[in-house]
Image 1 (cartoon, one colour):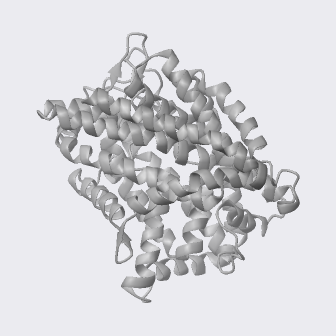
Image 2 (cartoon, helix red, strand yellow):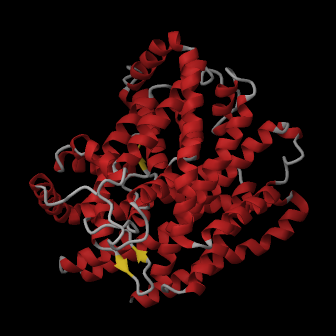
Length: 505
């Protein structure tokens, strides 16, 4: 049965890609950019409507994600708080052992996963949340980041626990493996295979949307903004920008996880420091406005305008953008964390809980404060996404839009190379761990970078969000079933740690 489903997916994917051949005819009359939108936007809109089915304005998928994160936070005794200090110690390499199985260090695994989350979701996603839900959306983003730390702990522990060590020394892991293998241990092998297959399919498409098209789209928009806007020489040449970006991505992803880890290990700290420094500078320059901004965030979060109106809208936007930014519970980060060098699966669970904290609690909050302090959210004048954030930063430093442009490109670039790895592992899970299979997916991935540069923001955001939350449906189901296994491993690890059986290096 699994073989037949795989064949059907192959046929569907080939049909979807073949639709691209209709673009030249459309392009002759409407241009390349409009032709791409005409071919793909209807698919994105239909799928988004299905995934975000709502009752009284609340998407059911949001309830599923939030309840799951809250459950894991309580079930593991607020591990996000009591394990925070140990997570930092592990990330510093105090327990690393080069002889352990795996391909990358704790820090490199964290940097690779962070490069897939610390990206345009922090810049464009926050702006979208505030422009739609107001300053109050920031509060719910922070809360979602805190709860998401526990989800990350569970999924990344399982990723190492059930990873597959290949004969050539490489490692494959993630929800595809811990769901299929873990469910088999629970005497549910058939269900495990079906869910693992479903996740792999959605991860492949999600990598092409959230980790690819959205990134190239927003990077291109920022470059256009700083080079003249509608009058820019690049305004109608998204395909050209996409080709250059695709080439730069291809150079790195050909080398696999070790090559990606080397690049992200240097790139992520560099770009995060630049962005945080700029945000802190603006906040300190306007320190007298900080209390008012904080008050606006809290009052907006609990607006009395109506539980069925303003409050629900703000809450949904906050959680939706936070999930898009830190991906907690989605199941992508475990694919990168599975490659860590360790014999103790729980250690990577500790390290991974730092991701939502850095990504959402720190960086997204700083972006939100800059937007609220500068007041740019009050009159967006049709601005959205990265353009709104750029305007907020430039209000303090007119020249900063050029620095932000560099940050946007670096964020987009690092995110894409990480997501290419996620998609590749999902692809090879379906089609085999072969070199030809890897090359085929990476070629498709680079093609979609070009497509993303030509699409409009609304279609890309809807498509990206839908794929992210669809993956969470399967992943969190697996986490519920396998959580007791993680809890037992945590108890065993903490007992040995307190007894001194686990030594620092």
